[in-house]
Image (tube, rainbow, N blue to C red):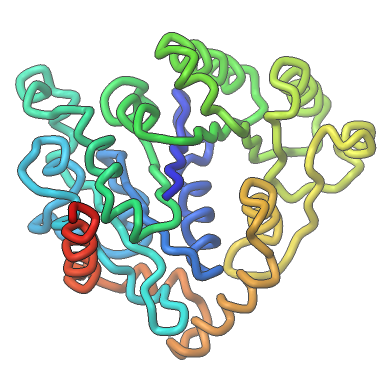
Amino acid sequence: MKTIAISTNKGGVGKTALSHTMCLGLALTGKTVLLVDNDPQGTLSGTYCDIDQTLPGMAQIYKGENEIFDCLIQQEAIQIDDEPTLIVVSANKELQGIFDPLTKDMFKLDRLTEALKEPAIQQAFDYCIIDNNPMFYGPNEASIRAADQIIIPCIPTKSDIQGLHRTFDNIRLMGPEQFRKISHIIPSKVVKTKLMRDNLEIMYRLYGKLVTMNKVMESSILPKMVEQKKILYISEGAHDFSQSMLALIAEVFSEIKIEQIIENLESVKKKQKISNLLDWMKRKKLKPLSIIKDFTERTSKEVVL
């Protein structure tokens, strides 16, 4: 299983949107994806289903009250060949306690790494995507230590570039092993202004090939950079999420084909008899996934033997 942390010190730059698109796109290719909502706000959990506060989630993993197997939730919509391909570990209100001086000692950050390194989890999933909150310490730091790869979303504005610098500095302070995990910077919300173009050029000069475009735009915005292949130019499509985001997935994960995502998306929508997959998903309730739990426990015993 490859673990990818979506991380930055700046809020509102598209961490949750990027996490959601990557999870959904990978799942629609038949990859089994573990989505970890590491943000106490629970925005991403709420995108897929109503958060049930009575079920164990990330807070219980950090506190050592539950194993990760107890927290696996199936998203019923995303099934390829009748097999679930997207499983959620939900955020919950108790996770906010990790920032409270009175309760933070109850949360042990290294438990996320331990949970994701479980042999059964490693075998059951192809990818793990971790969505984070903007605060660097706490769950965000834990996800960086647990990850194999770090992707940093950013809006090309002056304040966001400053936030990007802080993110790089904070990860650098964690040591070269963690810093080397940074693989992509994903600019979004690109508009046709000289200031935006200048900021993008600054980002490219500073971070080079790490910068990958994911926003629909015309080549007239940055024609020279497009011609020199300094950025990824992506055209628009008319699907549940844009062709640009699909192309981003194909850029980050070379084995993923856009056509396969679109084909499986249409198949799932037809099977569920719905026109819009995301609206249908939002109406679903969380449902514990005992099938995956049984599988992982059985596999774990086999690995030990």
